[in-house]
Image 1 (spheres, one colour):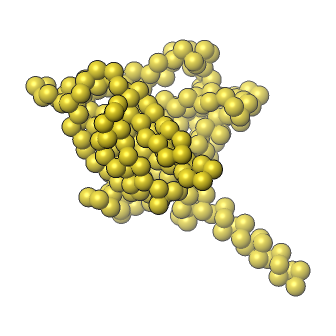
Image 2 (tube, helix red, strand yellow; image 1 turned 90 degrees about the horizontal axis):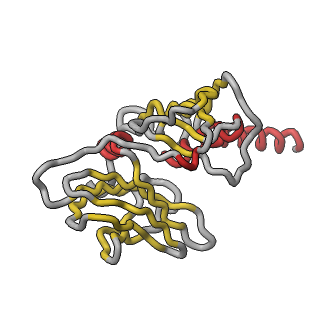
Length: 240
């Protein structure tokens, strides 16, 4: 009976590990691990890394063939953890392959692990998608399926409700307000991101859910144009 119990536990551990993304890290240099409270900066596909960045190595997050726990937030968190263990305080996304109907259902990324002095002063610059002669900005909103599937929330721009964000959802909105504002949502907690709206410009807002005490908390993230466009175009949502 003891052997059978041990076999069941061992089999369960194998199945659990196979559900997680495949992680491959190669380092040329490392420093003492960072404190878990220190944030790791994510530098997008079309964002330039700081000139003083020291490259510590590279991390790849992929699919084992059985992976199910591989949403974008999950793979980014895995890459950030590898950077943290190596003493890096930033990752620079070099490749991002979104899920596809004919391929993997996972997000897969390759990223540099960086150590950057005074990272708090780094302000990433992004390429802009701009349409001339229009009186609105374009806001692409999307949310992958995943944790908190039953939790939906209203998305606000300032005082106005602009859409209802559900699980496995995407929509394109024309925004006629310009200037500084904020996008926000609230369940038992509030999430908010500032946005400087310029007519003719395209923005990408990745939405999600993080764990809360009773109800999941909204997670909002404005992403750079190249990453956002790749994710938004390839993402097939239920509401399409």
